[in-house]
Amino acid sequence: MNPSLLSAGDFNQLRAFVAVAGSLNFSRAAERLGVSSSALSQMVRALEERVGVSLFNRTTRSVSLTEAGAKLFERVRPAVEELAEALGETRERRANPAGTVRIHCFPGAADLHLTPILRAFSDAYPQIVLDITLDDAVVNIVAEGYDVAIRLGEVIDKDLIAVKLGPELRQTAVASPDYLARHGTPAHPRDLLAHRCIGWRWLGQKTPYKWEFMENGKWFEVAVDGPLISNRKDFGVQAAVDGVGIAFASQQLIAPHIAKGRLIPLLEAWSAPFPGYYLCYPAQRQMAPSLRAVIDAIRGGLRATNAAGAAVGTGTAAMTVARAAGTTAPE
Picture 1 (cartoon, helix red, strand yellow):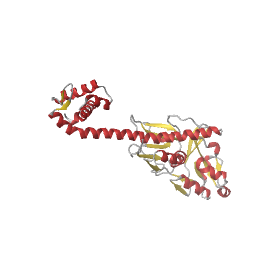
Picture 2: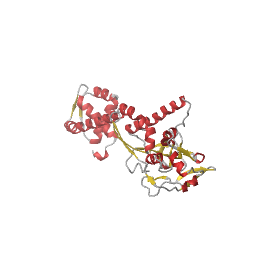
Picture 3: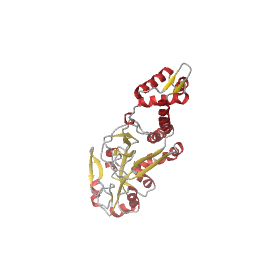
Picture 4: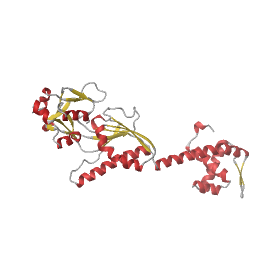
């Protein structure tokens, strides 16, 4: 029997043979395997036909191994038992997911969709390790070995499954009261060209991101300039609080500073909402239980958030599998 040609049927025949050889009783072996005695006999006869020799001596009262059967039993029993144990462990892993799941996530998305579920997830799945990379790089998650990513809809590869995670986002220009007192307030986005703006650069890009605004239903860009460029939006927001210049960031980052009067929102009439974060991952026929647990937990966290929002009348977007459109930048 050539191992390279071993099929599922071959394994079932060998498993049937080992069960009968171990008990020397077809009825008990059939009960152990959960098949009928006639089906078990057919599998054993098929194996004997394949190897070309009799493996059992059968009488109406007893069953015994032939010499060929005894030698085969000695050789294949450890392998069959090892395979059965491996399959059992695989089923156990499905019931109790374990292993490492690699996640690539935009930093702003982590605060919204990962941090809130970490404690409950860790308690529910103590054998799963979450290996999380937080940055704004637009990586090929398959090529880089990631299992799942959370990013803005505009930078999701078309061959990935994408699940919308929340409501639309919005970016706004902001500055400190001190800065505005010294430099004045821009009345139109193009007035920013005369101001000291705090730039942001996509990770891995050489040129800063051009700030995007909407006018008459169309997006347009402003290539701002100023004394500071960073690859971290939160760093730029803090610089704006300190009066260095005008920053451009999402409501998530600037709302606490606006509430306390440290920053003043600017040009809001041109600051339109855009599609938010998506959970994305490659399509798989058989998904690893650990990855399924992560995906379900993130989506479950969204459902809990949506329910809470509905209770206070805030409303949230329904979860859908879709592709986002628009031109935006992460926070």
